[in-house]
Length: 279
Length: 309
Image (cartoon, rainbow over the protein chains, first blue to last red):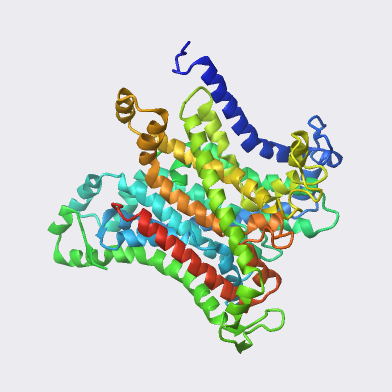
């Protein structure tokens, strides 16, 4: 018997079984880690695994609020991520506008060059960044991390924003141009408001890139500017730190990107494909 | 850079304005290009210079003496460069391939658009949103040899688990890193390819159905070409990301046991940030940069040749 959706009962069951398997494999580990953060420490490595336990917020309290530095590190992560988003816009907005609106022979090469930068190995730049930033006195500052993060955020934002500006009809701008408006007035007053979804996409992804980046803070942050992943990494070398603490800190690091992707779900595909697919 | 302005209206405006317009596009692109050139250029020049000097940061704050190509020789011979390169290639090629095909299969599953698929789609991307280093913590917990969930699961399924644990055995260390990476990035391919599949025009699918196209023909001859452009970009990106991986390795195995799971990225990490041997690390940096440029250049040349911009 064929149902409304066009799949027979057996096929449907098989498809749902596949879906269930996928969700268990991809979402299960995250749930398991969330449980680690709220379970009593003695059940963390119980064999067979313990599913029923009385939740406790002790680990969260110790690592995030009380003596641990994770609260401070979360704020550091936030400063760096917001800074990276804000600094990226004045560079990427004009470039994306130019690449979308004007005809140039080198356009293809400029675009591919931006894309190529995203493939540079971050690890190769860590030592030079560390020494160069120390020499100009920026090592350990938020600014140093925000600056080097632009190697990721600017190229990405230009690709995404260009795709959005491409979709704005030129006629809208031409009307203003005939009225004598200057190019920057047109860009900022007419085009930018129309590509607000594009600004949302670039900002959310730039934020997540920066928030999740562990390579640059590894060498550029100091004790007081360490971001969340670096702080958590430090736990492995600290005696007396149990997996419950690591779990609590890691969950704190996982939550913002997850929430951003869930809230702005309709923009996710656009960002993942560098603006190519509307989703 | 030769620039012409394409709108008809621009040609009607006075001459002075037109001259501004001639340089305008280059002017608008310049800040981003200069910023990026500085951020990429300085470190590369810095590394190139120091690759010819003996310099260990633990003994001296400045480069000590010119040693010619000795750092390159040492990097190639003394620090398991060959083993790292082989591991990196194995990890990168198998990882990208598994993630692409598994992701494509999941995309096809989601594209059936049965009830619940759109919620699942929103949830499935979650692993990709996590920082790789945090994903590393997650898997290190699950790989624990005495009480990890995956160790327990493998035992329950009668799969042989090495006594040293999955991360502690030279036979399974690299595989364990691969699994963590596949977990994190398969959803990325699945979501992107799913969106691509949805963008295939209905008429095309209908026409193919009327022609009685087989399932395989439908997937590979009709649907895949529509997502090819995007697939080529994300394949390249993922390939290079995986090629550069070091954070997963850092958290999970530190390249061990021995050199069994050491990647080029981790070798570089060790030379620079553990041994503080700037000279050798700089030499390795340049060898990696050359390898990557060759790979990316070849790929772009062949894959993007026929693109319209």
